Length: 288
Image (cartoon, rainbow, N blue to C red; front, top):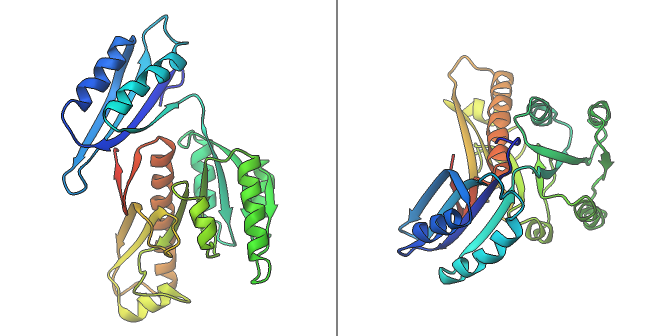
């Protein structure tokens, strides 16, 4: 996304009906806006319509966003819209959660430094101290919240205080190996992304890649999804697969799994940062 000009992203979802596109584009054009990108989808099964538009004000109109938002209310009410308007010069605030594995964190930080991830990292939270040196090298606040059966509720409350105090918009579970409570999942609904290997639910429990080796799998996969109270069953954002064969030992499968996990998670996070993801009941609509 270009930041030398003030671009805005308009996200809309509403019941499908005639006239939506005409109403939105006419309103933007009538308010001195230039639409540089637009995507839409009509879901025939749910009867919902989704739209994402990227626009900017024409020269001399850059300060009129408040007026634009106020006036758009009438358009939204006419079509029963749920809508969001985002300024691309205001990066999303992201909190990263980890345990002991560092591959997803390393990949996200690398892409962040390369300018691929337009975000502000508010903190790195972990239930272990293993990755504290990495956070300190990056100059990122590290918060240690060890979790036991007795302290789980207390530490989840502490986590939410951090989320609220830092103005965090998105929580990324970058191989955070703790199951979140139903209450925390509800509080983070639509703004927490997790990554897991796609063997689930076929290979649950310890050492899934070793289980996969014993079964002679031919595909290694990973799934990035929104967090819900149903473990690893949230709306899917991105999936990656890689073909393997009989020569792969368990350690080879683990290494391949790391690759698929980093790619799937980074894509999912990027889609969310760019406001490309729409929740559609238990599914997602993503305008790539």
